[in-house]
Image (cartoon, rainbow, N blue to C red):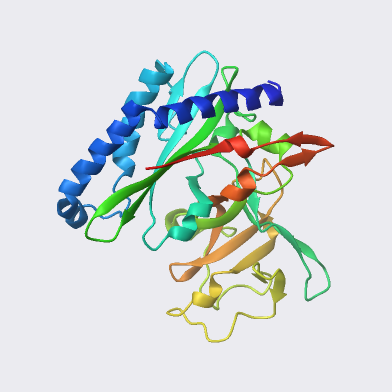
Length: 332
């Protein structure tokens, strides 16, 4: 399928979803859930651990209103998908429901939090050339997002229909005694082919957390086995990926109980490669310090997309692609 066709479909369904979230029907839905959550605030606060109190209700509303208003009558059958996954005769529609709290997290409004099964774009963060202490420079592989759906459908086309990815985010202000809705927005994340061929700037801001191999499978594996804080082999390179340098040794003052200085440190194994992405690209194996051990991580589990970079114009081979339409917001 032609990239320009996919972009037009992205625009079409961005407009449809924006019309949905700004409709009187949907806004009344939001008012109802806000009222119920406010009335039952203490119950929810004392029995529901996550602070994002609106996510489940938002997802339920979307599951009802998207098929009803946008005329989707068929469910996407595979479990590798976003919260809401539907089909019609031209697209697969993935919509992820998110809620955020402005209280103490105002800076997060510049980012879109998303998971690896909620998009189709292949993203990379912190991939860079490292000047080696030995003189043999190497490439730090960075943290790479390769959505699992691509293993079965390499171009994110399912039954000749593109898989389109959207996030509907609901912002509230929750001070611990009461909560109020503040803003809703719909974000269109580029399709795999659209991102590959029309974006020159990386849109990934940072990683939230990482996916590690279970100890049960890694402990007895020579390639994947974890190492103690100071008990790793000399062949592993210590990389400060924040500053893009190799270190002779771990930072001073760290201990198993004080590992704050290791947040931007990774161990790079130049003799082995990322096991999950080996069919996609040769990337060196890396370890992050987690749970008292240096553990192999092939991919982040959660990450943030930069909203400003998402909507930036992209100039590819003297052709301009405008993206300011990818985010629509409504103050509540």
